[in-house]
Figure (tube, rainbow, N blue to C red):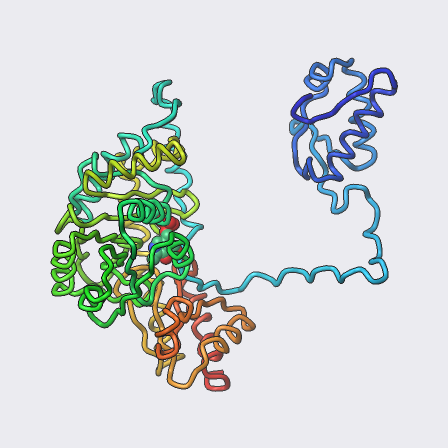
Length: 472
Ligand SMILES: Cc1ncc(COP(=O)(O)O)c(C=O)c1O
């Protein structure tokens, strides 16, 4: 069978032994892994052009040796052997480098930011949406797609973003991307190609995006963030004509861009003939105040709205969007046509169906309630266990920014927390080198993935890591 890459030398005879040897080699090399289901003896015999009895003999031999497991109703599968050849691991050769240590166990309390509650992915409703989409798709839908994204999803998102984010989003302005990161890297390439020399970005910002931004060849201008958000006067002095901002919930500090700064930012973009890239990464989650409409709705010809389902559904879907001025949307579409021919369409149709059927709104309502309860539990527990920390960004999103009490060493706190089983991110790597030294040590705590009881325990352990001996 070609899929199994078993080759037979018919002149050498003993075909059953050759088949068995081929399977053993495939298991040893890892090409066939535990649990893999094998073809029926009838199908394999047909594929190899041998009699069925030859395959049955080979399967019986391998079953007797423990390579295969045959169960009625479940067919024949590769057995879960730790070492397929059944030999104990050889002792290390003298002088050989030591075996790598076993990886550390996963943390008991994972408070790393950037993930929604992955266990809450609406599997059944997603399956239903995907099934409904697949059932009704015309054959043509399986051809190379519109590189800007399938029309149904662009229309669905335009409606959703207009309704929920006050975006100015007709479907022609919407371009489907593989997440915010993909949209950003495509836009940086376009900026570079159209004469931009610099890109401004908030200080601090997401450390995950920095290497990608640095690799574009554009000069990175880091712009301080204060209690009103991005310092637009500093942006003006930077000389950049494009800026990446997180106005609804600054990442990581959680500051909301003030009304005065929003107006100043739009005025700046008009003055310099510039472009604002609005990263709306966690806009769905607002708890204590009305959602702030997106900046793009204020000046759709100066702002590109970037969003994705990474926080609302799951980052693994790699589904996001850019809502851009028509000329930029056309270039983004062209960029996709010229670099990757567009994104996978089945997920796009499934999301379009999920939005149209109300599943997306329903899921977000559920998650908002759940995250609010988690936010409350963590904020209260931090207040109890680390009363002298300053907690920022509580009113929105799925992370908190926690300034440590004076005199604490961020790295030591992160390391002590890790030893106690609590994974947290220090904020220093999110600051520019110039400002990291003066920025108060801080942690960024993602709370979406843990239930309230576990969050309270994590806060207690974190309190001990921040102030050893104080709390328990
Ligand atoms: C602030 C911020 N924006 C954007 C992203 C990337 O999101 P996406 O998965 O949509 O590419 C991240 C990833 O963690 C992020 O923290």
